[in-house]
Every structure is written in C-alpha cells, then in structure tokens.
Length: 531
Ligand SMILES: Nc1ncnc2c1ncn2[C@@H]1O[C@H](COP(=O)(O)OP(=O)(O)OP(=O)(O)O)[C@@H](O)[C@H]1O
Ligand SMILES: [Mg+2]
Image: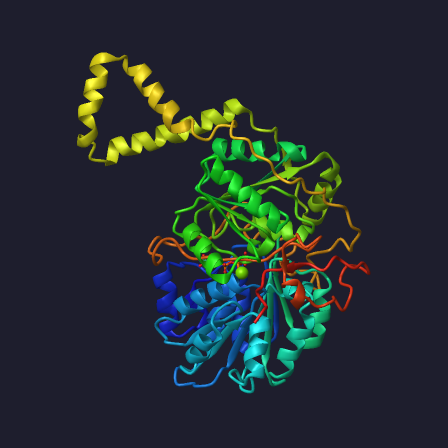
C-alpha cells in the first residue's frame, strides 16, 4: 500500500485526493500510477469498485499543464452515464489544478457540447458514436492527443464498436500513451491490445476470484412465476439501503418497475429506450435516495458508482459471466460490504454453475424467503425507523392524539395496529402479471475472463484486491456524501425486446467472433452511441 504522496504527484493533485478523503492508494492505483506516469502503455485489471478511475485519472491530470489549450487526452467509455460519471470524478481530481475536462455523449444537445468545446477542454471523456460525430463535424480534433484510455475496454470491444474505436484511434498520433482498464479481461482483449498498444505493461490485481471480495453472493432457485414474490420478499427481508435489480429486457424492466411501484416500493426503471432526460432523472433520483430500487438492464452493469447500493438482485441471470461480475460489482465498492442475490430457474442451474466456474467463486444457495421472514423484515425496519424518530424528532404535534388513544385503548394493541398500517401496504394481494422470460441458454466459450495475455502479476496474491479485507476506505469528508453514479446499457436484442446498446437502426453487424469461435448474439443498445 502506498500513500499518494509516494508517487510524486503535484501538490495540487494531492490536495484534491486529500479533499476526496482518499487516504491510501488502492492496489491497482499503487501498481499502475507509477507506470502510467512514465508514459508507458498499460493494461489494468482489478476488481470492481477498487478505484480504477483514479488509477488512470491521476497520472493523466498530473501530466497536463494548466495553460494547455488543446485536447491532449481522450477517455472512452461504453455508456453515456459512465462518461458523465468518469468526467465527474476527473473533475474532482482536477479541481485544484484546474485541468479542464468535458463529457461528450449521445442524447445530449450537440450545440451545447460544441459551445462547451470552445472553452478548450484538455480531457474529453466520451462515447464512441458521439465522438465520431464531432470528429466529422470538425468540432473535435484529436491531432494533439497524447493519452488515450479505454475504460471497460473489454466491453468496448464486445459491443461491436471495434470499427468506431479503430476510426477514432487512427486520428490520434501514434506517439501516444494508451491504457486499457476493466475488471474483466477476456483473452480476446489481446486483439485490441495488439492493435492499439505498444509493448504494454500488464497490471493486474485480481487475487483468486474475479468478483469483488466484499460481496456476499447467493442464489435462490425459483420458477419464473415465483420471481416477483421472491423479489418483494427479499426486499422486505433485507431492507436494502439502495438496491439495483437487473432484468434481461427493456420490457422486463418496464413491467418490473411498474409492478414494484404498484406494490408500494419506491422504484424506477433505466434502459436504453428512455430519453436521456428520463435516464438522467432516474439516476438523479437514485443517487439522492428519492428512489430506493433501480430496476435496470445491463445498461447499469458497468462502472456505475453510487454510494449506498447495498444490494444487487439478478432478477434474470445474465448471459455472460463478465456481466455477472460487473452487475454484482455495483455493490461492495470502496471497502464497503454488499449483497448480491441471483434468481435462477431450474433450467438455468447449469448456467449458474458455469458462472461460478468462470468467476471462480461458489455462490451459496439460499431458500426462497418466506412470507414470515418478509413480514419480520418489514417490522424490524419499521421498528428501527420509529425508534429513530423517537430519538431524533420533535413529536409534540402527535402527542395529543397519542395520549388520547392511550387513555382509551391498550398500548400494545395500538402500537400493533400502527405497525400493521405502516408495514401492511406492500402485501402480495395486488395482482402482478409479468411476461415470462425464456431461460438463459448455455453457450460454449473459452473459459477465461481474466487473462489479458500474461498471468496476472497479482495472481494468487492476496495483497491484490485485498481479498476478504476490503483494504482501503476513505475518510468521511468526501464531497456531498452521496456521489454520483450513473450507468447504463443493455442485454441483447431478441424480438426487439432485449435491451441492447444501439438502437436497431444504428446497430452494426458484429464483424468478428470474440467467443472462442462462437458468435454471440448482437447485443445492446442503450443509445449510448447514437448521435
Ligand atoms: N484510494 C481510494 N481510497 C478511497 N476511495 C477511493 C480510492 N480510490 C477510489 N475511491 C473511490 O472508490 C469508488 C470506486 O472507484 P471506481 O469507480 O474508480 O472503481 P472501478 O475500479 O472503476 O470499478 P468498476 O470496475 O465497477 O468500474 C469511487 O467512489 C471512488 O471515488
Ligand atoms: Mg470503473
């Protein structure tokens, strides 16, 4: 473990780190910052939520002179919300130094972006489609770019955006530093690396398991038609601070968020068919806690960093182990614990075992929560809330009625009735109909999502992601407490239903096979790349 001062970063950069409350560098930061500072190409892999953004962001910001007026660094992300989030984090890290950065993504008014580009940002954080649009309009010029980062590099490759990335990178001078980061590095990342990187240093801090160590992983075997009740019981039993529920398709997400609302949960949906405005609204509500449950397609699987996400539920199992790792990685971040639950139909058990094998982690089987457990959970949380009110609030306004009632009725009965009133809203009586989803089918593939060529240097080494320990934390002086994650994207498209990255008109045929010779279905469209 290093302190940030060991890296020789500029005082103003260190000041921002202190302000954010980062005390120690995370393992991926300790390993990659010194290499990145030398200007070498780099492939960085570390578990979800371990600070990869700052691992590439800090050396980037450190190297850019304040008076620079050209675009000298380009960060590409697979989704719009991730572009926004990375830009926010970069903005915070660059706060004292004054480095200028700008997110550029589809769905936002292009005229506004052009206006912002006139302020001479030095770092652009963007999604490929919109970036290309600006390049074609000559509103973005990449001739002076010295550093390129592909965040979620494997995903960028996996979405059929190789062509766009190639077109963009062709415009960046060859004399540059290129860095790839992700929690998962399937072996096909080599292809991207060979093409775009020069003699890269592989930095990997994946200990035994690919998924983050502080996530308690469980699955429940359920039939498709039991899933909704299983979800509500689980939410009641566990009373998450914030939860993300992943569904397979856009339709699923719509139906599920509506059904949860009907049952009295504070939930909303996120997928690629919503307007950017709607997406921004949902994310804002989730971040500030005005909704507790975010129902999303894989649009929210990568990179999303929302503090307070205590639970992730795979309402539908994801197709790929990578997606599983990233989805559950929305919790258990930055040294905090989290719980991940997956619903598995009997026909999907093999697929679950496949995910276990690839991620090298056994997922514990748990029983379907009973109604009694759900009720108990609701009562517990209600009691906690009542006691909090008793401790903290001015209750005078309510005391008159309390005294009156207590004079006439038994106190236990009164309190029990109040509990019934408060907790009884979300009962299983409101009928809910969800369109059933087909079970996930197993696919053959190369069982390797970790090797980025070489054996990871941190392999088998607990110092890595801090297996079991969580390792680092930040002090509580973090700005605003509740920081912003967004996230987005989707599964693949089946009968126009799966959430996929691009709108169908926008989708390119996948040009190559990534999957050990097997073609995966074209996936995703979260409109991240549209213009
Ligand atoms: N050294 C540090 N100390 C404490 N907190 C940190 C440190 N570095 C980063 N963080 C915080 O940890 C959280 C996770 O960081 P980040 O989003 O960069 O993770 P990541 O590795 O990119 O995860 P993912 O694979 O899901 O994208 C963020 O809130 C970030 O601000
Ligand atoms: Mg990240």
